[in-house]
Amino acid sequence: MSTTQSKFQKTNDFNEITYGRRSVKLYDPEVKISREEMTEILAEASRAPSSVNMQPWRFLVVDTPEGKEKLAPLAKFNQNQVLTSAAVIGVFIDMKNGEYLEEIFGKAVEHGFMPKEIAEQQVKVVKPYYDNMPASDLRDVNLIDAGLASMQLMLAARAHGYDTNPIGGYEKAQIAETFGMDKDRYQPVMLISIGKSAKEGHPSYRLPVDTITTWA
Image 1 (cartoon, rainbow, N blue to C red):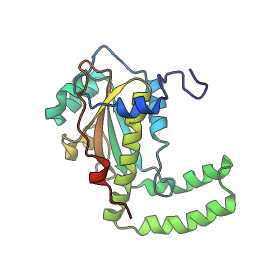
Image 2: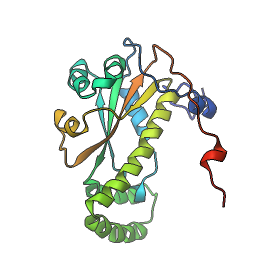
Image 3: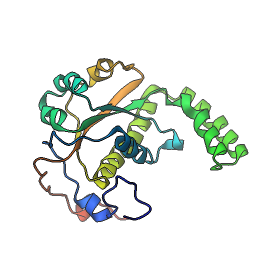
């Protein structure tokens, strides 16, 4: 194993991670993921880029039988994934993520990633921008950023040897409150099941690059 790989990571072969990924609907229920390893996967997902590094994604990890019992009725058409996977990760956006602005830039200075004067300039510009941004615009920005983190999470999981499935079919209006979260602040993006496949996901046809690309 390369020294750049974590103690959990199974591969850093980009082609295997990208082309080997499948959306898996049925998992081996005996396979569990430790919270230590899950923390590492989430840390890797959090390396995704975001607008002015504001990192609006928030994760709800449902990995206990009690949590799955709560979640299953909210994902009626995706209960196989909920009940057989090692965990289901709810990806949310934090509509008050601006509260972390000074911490993010302050820590960047503390760790030597950014000169103090540059950080102070950035905060002066970014803070009023975020404070005055219409909620609909903030939601759009945050959804894009959380989508990047979601894809990175699935690829990180694949590098650790696990399978995933992004899920959009669930009761979005109920999920935050069901798990004791402020539904106005934390708004759902998707669920991602993660575990080891019991039934291999099937390949899918992708439109050719010529169809989806315009050159200019």
